[in-house]
Length: 332
Picture 1 (cartoon, one colour):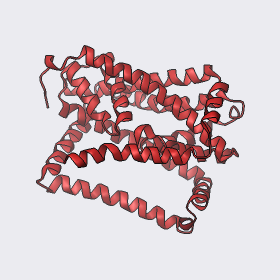
Picture 2: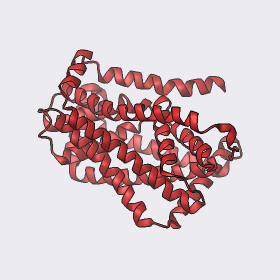
Picture 3: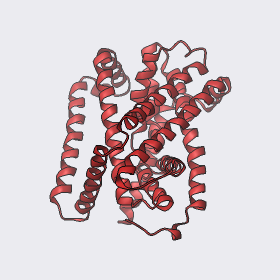
Picture 4: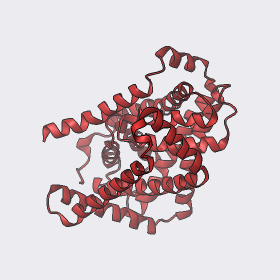
């Protein structure tokens, strides 16, 4: 059991190191440093401010979901919990949900079983939004995206290039099969894993049902759209940090948003490595070199990460000081 937990901690970190090393193999620290020196810090600061506002909007949307369940959480308490969650996710992927629930339980007395369900409901909603946006992207950019993926495989993994569609079908089938298998075990099994899955499913169902009883549905929809729009603007304004990218269009920023979100969702620390590889190679669509693409992806990733580390770390320290665990019962 201890070995399994240790591997669960080490694997994402090692995978992140491998992916990041692979992505940055053709660029130097000096090149990265020069890029940051040449950046226009007005646009960088604006991107960071937009990032902070997006996380504030996420915290407010979470409050709207918790309200029908009978729990009133202040904007400050929800925001602290959200930032602590992002910070924990950087240290250990998927730990952010637990940290976020723990903080709001200590600050507001919301039972962890309830907050977990609402967070999973949020995740499901965000995945559905991402799926719709990704489907729209493929509908418009199917030819260019397929060509780019094919070129990447031909350069990096030539043995797989001839089997691109077979590889894609296997990946999609594997993901679907894994989801069905986990769902079946959760519903039919009797072991510890199954019991845990049943509790999670019950929490998800409660969270979904809370959406039916939202007092301000229009406001919930508005903030859901606002969150993604702010994510989009965060990336778009970074184009103006450099003369070489100031000409990039708004549609390309939309492509960066979708593919970058997929990279940030990878089970590695802060999406490091996965984000660089996915976004870095996208710049080939706008005739930039692979080296330039990786450097720009590194800059964009660092801009997002800096906000989460500074504010997330500050929120974590504040939560340790302000929310003394001994003051609140453990409502699990």
